[in-house]
Image (spheres, rainbow, N blue to C red):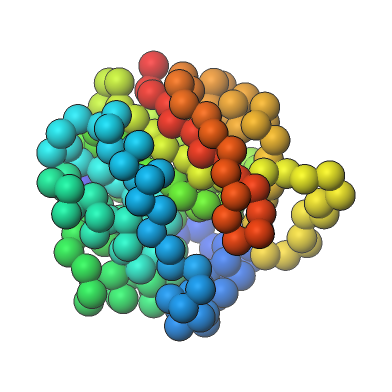
Length: 206
């Protein structure tokens, strides 16, 4: 890592303060209703990642997915903007968890074999910051590294909120972002969860 002082590099845009505040204030309710292991999605992702490789979970929350990666023999890392989520993950799960935003990754280049972003990067970043974050993903992935994404599908009539960021996308919009930032998508599937449709996309750094 380039520095252990990750908190000093936090950008404090108002919208991200609201995202962080929501997760800090709703850890208990999240554990009861939102902390669901999507094993089939994780297994498909892991099929594409080098065995025993390093995997970063962006928006790792309680550390649920990092724990699963470690159980499967991978070296698991997690980052999150919520202090309470990171504290919970460090207390209850194995892995290396860091308080860090998704736009400025404090890791060396070509470090990870896989990066996982389940309802995080595309969900909670402003549109301007999504591209910046994807460039960081590409920078820190090894050659042919694998990037797994879950993002909410945009439906007709959806209205974007004015405050708390919870973005929705068409498949084309996601693929445009990925292609522009140097990724080639090779697996795309729509699925339903929490009474909504989502896209699950796996791509490789090119």
